[in-house]
Length: 103
Image (cartoon, rainbow, N blue to C red):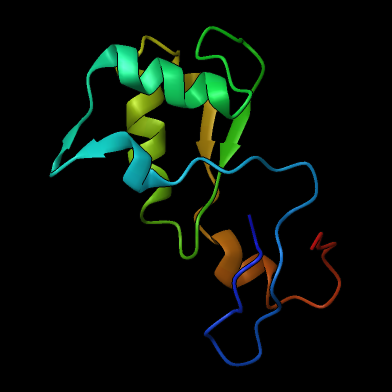
């Protein structure tokens, strides 16, 4: 949610405007994805429907754990051509003084 202090020097704290928080750790049971029902519930609680055909852009701190969230959505039947991982993620967005940030 962008409320924790940013540990990386020169990086702003906050989050991208309009973003929703679904941590990759909420998708996993150990090293595997949680059962479908739990994933659906987690996304629903965050205000995300796997059935929605609108594009979803996923980010994290560096672009790595965002792939877990994308994989979870695909496991629920979401068309992967409508799900995009922003590989620059917060490392790129938060370090650019010209990008908007919500705190």
